[in-house]
Length: 463
Image (tube, rainbow, N blue to C red; front, side, top):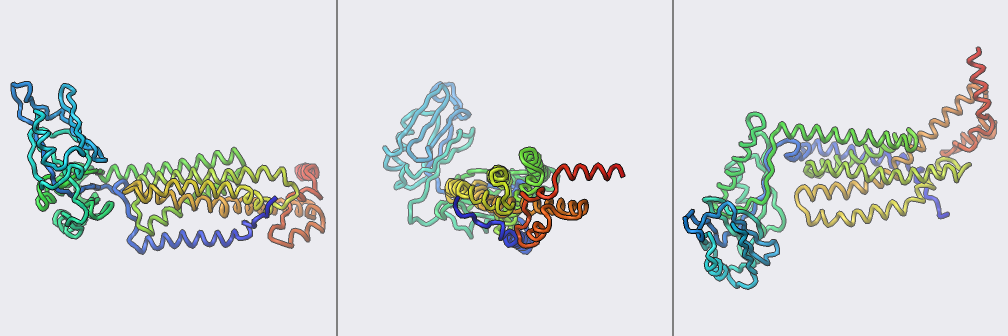
């Protein structure tokens, strides 16, 4: 067998390091104004917008007795592909037209083609002649009745941006000074996430207040940059009452998950194995909570989902080690329990590290390419997997060893009290006091058999 690594020999150092890191994270979070709670847990408004110039707008024709010019405002759907390959519009009767944007050099040529289609809408050009249809920003939407549908485009590289972050923040302060602003992607994309706390809601769970605030933000920005220049890409609003319900539910889910794991590991192995596994899972959860607090990562439902996923991943790693320990308790009889633990961890080490690395490699692209909750989820998963692998090796298994030695030592003390000596006589006495891995489980019944214990108990009952 390959060389056995003495993981248990550094158990107290690892325990101390975990306590220092976790405690340090919580202290830093407290000193740094607490956690960055998302609207999932405190309520409020989260709105992602993009500021971009308008290429042209489309409006539905008025109702008419002529079948060729009926008002199809409620059924006309426009779809500009995200890859800017096509523009498709569909209206009543299943009539569908698809235009390849690469066939048109400028917006003017595309507009001229659309006007010649005798479609039930009118077009108003708003962009410069040099704009290419390939610069259109992808979207899919129905044509609003009695409103315009705006087609925006990306500015060419090197162009002056339509908005600047400081300017946008100033406009936002004019509406609500406590709102936070965050850029998304590259600066030239001019995408922003706006967050407003739930304290704008004066009574109950009045979501209409948040919806009205969202409209006010769009209207105020358009007064600066022009009508139709603000694209609302995503919006989420939550009243404080529902936010509290979600927070309570998340905590309840964590408690239920840990309780079921405790029950399952107890049935599958032994109670002290289960307790050690739960301590390791609590360690992983506290580590992630301390980390996201210290680094000001937003805590939302994606963060809770990541913690639950990490719990499942970590217990899987721990069970693999436990299974090897149980197998070696049969195969390596006569081996000191500390050595048996180290052997089991060493044997499963390659599997544990390879699984962790491949999972992290799969999640890293989510962190760098994702945004918002996806990025938060990936961040928690990456560091959670590292913490879970660490706890399976340095937390769970050493606790099993400490618990086992404590139980074994109590049995030895009972033997001394009952029989006046330890199992194995004086030689075992010397062995037990000579080192850290001193409890030799194979010798625990060498001098005193189970029959002797039973007979002694019967004698005590008679007395």
